[in-house]
Image (cartoon, rainbow, N blue to C red; front, side, top):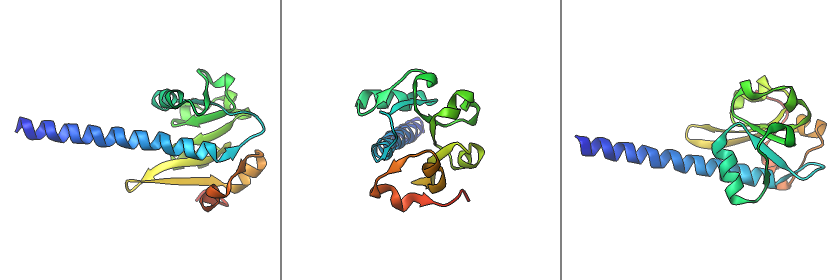
Amino acid sequence: MKTIFLFFFISISLFASNLNHHQVDIIEKILSEISIDKKLKIWSDNPRILRELKEHKRFQVVNNMKQSNMVILEDKNNFTNACMCKSVFVLKYKLLSEIPKSFGALFWKKGRPNIVIIEPRIKFQSIKISKALEPYLEEKVW
């Protein structure tokens, strides 16, 4: 019984860490397909994402929100007045409606990643996207 439990626990742990790794890979691909007027300086309220983005060294990662111009949020409580002048990407679909400043989201539904980018918001924030992200454009949050 202990062996079965141990096997089950290890399998779940490996699956969860694999999903987390894929999440950072997808975030990197999305960020590489957008451009703002400045060089991206990224901060996230998720320490794992920050750590992995630093390790991959594709983007400049900063240690506090005030130094950033791109914020990746997982928790609405971490949205402060300091975020108001930054581009905000969220990791839960419901945060798109709760944080009107957010321009896009990456979230998991039925075990698959979903990407949504709100077209009026990227236009308002002067964010340019490549053709690779056009299939993910939506006119509004549903």
